[in-house]
Length: 287
Image 1: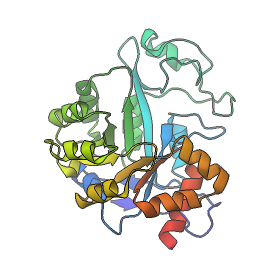
Image 2 (image 1 turned 30 degrees about the horizontal axis):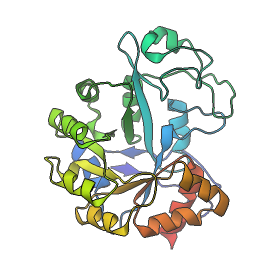
Image 3 (image 1 turned 120 degrees about the vertical axis):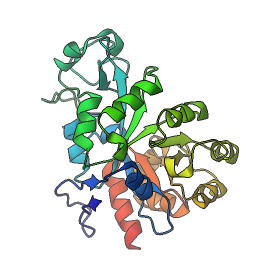
Image 4 (image 1 turned 60 degrees about the vertical axis):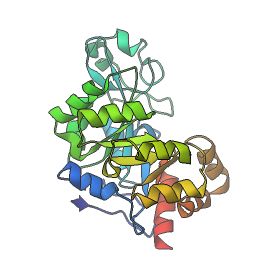
């Protein structure tokens, strides 16, 4: 496993992309297991869009990795001709210079459009396919796939297997039944499972899914400390979604919001404020 680390002294300095290379599912699983000395991670929501860099595209993923070796959360939908593409919304209206529903458009129609950045400016970048992203990420980054539009688990699992991507992918699930469906289809797959309270976590650990396959998403507000402690007792990492209120709080109050969240037990911060979270992680690690 090769991991390149960013400069730890000047948070404004960015350099070459900080790639991660995992040879197998087992190596990825071991890296994502919680240990007391584990370095916190950022999860870049929709891949980390910034001015000039649209959400859910490879060029943005590369840019994100210049700030921190982040997990790249990204969204998958299916076109009318059954191509899996990277798109959050059910239409292309907000993020491209075109209009239309993803499920009613062919891949060629979607590919002919250009992506728009979060600043509203048109770029030269195009909508990538899941296959392209899986190939690009090999030896570079961990992908966290948020599956949209009712795509069946077998479709996603079979695509991951076709590109031998179990070494650099995890799949986001929102209920236990879906998490179990992914595990049953491929026991060598990392799964992000939701558990916002002790009851939900108890159901998860009583399921057939081993701890080695899991990271746990605790929600978008800070949970009770006992939940973090329970998650860590199984050597599982806890993801806290700062998207929304917590990111806004950090914008108003500074990176101390994020360092406090890490100090309280969060291991991975899923954020729209990538640069601030990267700075907070460096500060937290140096304390």
